[in-house]
Length: 268
Image (cartoon, rainbow, N blue to C red; front, side):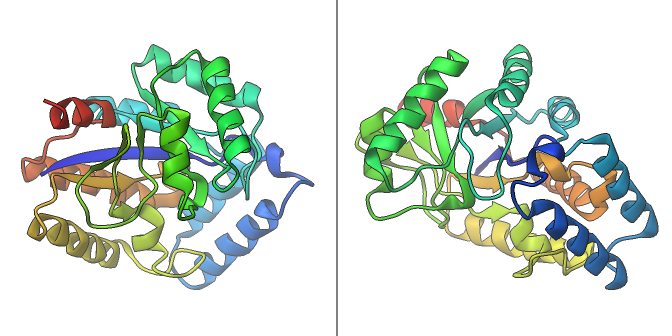
């Protein structure tokens, strides 16, 4: 089994949410719930305020550096459309896309449109035009999909998709590769809540069950989704969890690849 780690870009700045949605009040409520429940420390609480006043809700550069040091190919899904709780501008997205290009990251689209064929095609064309990238993949924001979503994605020309959450090996839908993923940071740390509800050891325990199941079901690729925003000491459990996952996989001789490398392997 090999591992594909990817990162969804949901936020870039705090200011993109002000007077546009409820993300900021939810952020405030969440960090107080986590503090009073004993899930975060006073230091984390203070650092979250620091992030807020610095207008910084992304940790893309720091995450790429960590990945590079540890031999993890960085794969990012970046939106060019606004969606639920996602409000950054295309100019902000493009700044980071150019940085990702310079650092040889794999870049796909974090899709917003999932049930309207015309709008999905427009999103695909705009991403290609804006970024100059061809032959790219997608993961839907909030992994939303309908019975027709994947067929439309294939018809639009996507090389791969990683929206499906299941314990299945990659398979083709027309000309598009579908890469089901099994593990997401929030699922094991929030554990069914809208805030952190478990400690690091419990999160590790939850994670090992998923990895063991993937191995027992003979999956060729373990799909992991980690959001860059949490690669920060203001989310210490999340940060330590991700660093532990990478180290655990390395110690167990599980090789890291990105989607395009996996496709090349599958098509040999």
